[in-house]
Length: 547
Image (cartoon, rainbow, N blue to C red):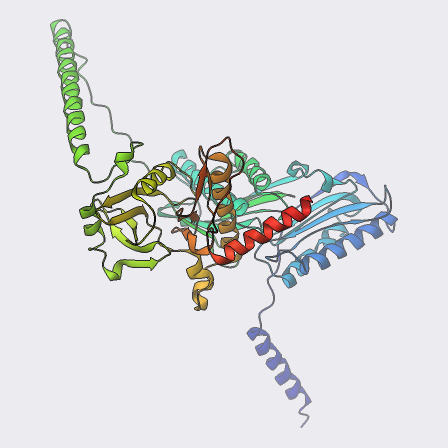
């Protein structure tokens, strides 16, 4: 018996089983392409040879991009002179690894040199796959980035059913999601890429009989763009969405420098960066109260007279209610232990309120201990969480100097500065009341021994912390009414809110001077040791550069 056919069949079955264990890499589907048929080149010409070299170079370079975080983006120019010179740009989706990026870009020659109704012989073309895009041209489009050189739209095969209001609300949710993603991609990442979801509890019925509860969105710019430029590019696409989509459950607007897409199915890899919840639909307007139109003569006059009397009575009641409310507010305001206005006295808390808020400065409420004293978490009677810094009794800061400084710092308002809510100075106690920030200080994550905590600081979050801290310093140095030099900026004095946004804190060593002065002299060394060292090194460098 010849066993070779049996062995061959066994080998085939073994290979099939192994192939099921190792799925192929993610493929790329062709979404759109556009050929500029106004220009052409001859077969086997120098331009065609340069174009082949360009496409090969884009695929190779984007797959091993040196940007960090890595993202498949590259530009190239091939050719010595016009008319044979060709410019090109390649960009892969932000969740695509180097291997899949190169694989996607390597498919572009199928469109560029394919026969039939593709782009064979055309000097300028744009090719969009779901994972990558390429634009090449005989013109130097890289010198003047303009997303309008090509813009392709597409919509899905299903639509939201029902009245026009349902389709309008769905479109509004899509626009809200894409707008939030555009802010995130432009200002919170260096890859200029963001994906996210919008979830609606009520859902939307579609023509295919399904009910849609989840909308997935994606936006992306080329990563070489500045944040403002990327946001403007995406906003131009958002402005076109009402015209492009009318209740469609999927769609895209594709450009060379930025693009957006949304679907009711998940079309990207990885976790969404934003997860939004749709607000409930507005209730329908109540029906107008029917009026009696049959009565005439004296009946009409009686109704008019009754309406006039009702209006007068209602007006008098509103006036009396307003006076009573104002009187009650003014009397209650005098009794509050905390207030929020520009009067310095309004920033004063009484000690009893803060003792109750912190459970008499209980050890379990202690958040940490700094150079000037301990910090405790507290809850005010109306539910607001606060952080109370209890200065050590041995602190050398005088009562008058501390009060004057606090009154000045309390007027600062910026998203990247910790908000001072008030102060309490009774007896030997000196207490500062700040807004509570749940993620504590940056150093607790940056230098944490547990790797789980350090993983809470991916590059996008670190970039946002750096950017926000710089904005806070710019406000202190340039934009506030009083100029402030912090003099002790370190990771321990950068607090993080629930969204990991940074807020500069601890102005105990800050130096204040008026807006007319551009310099100040300190008579003693202050601050943390390594902060002083870095400042000294920077000053020395600036002096050497100047001299």
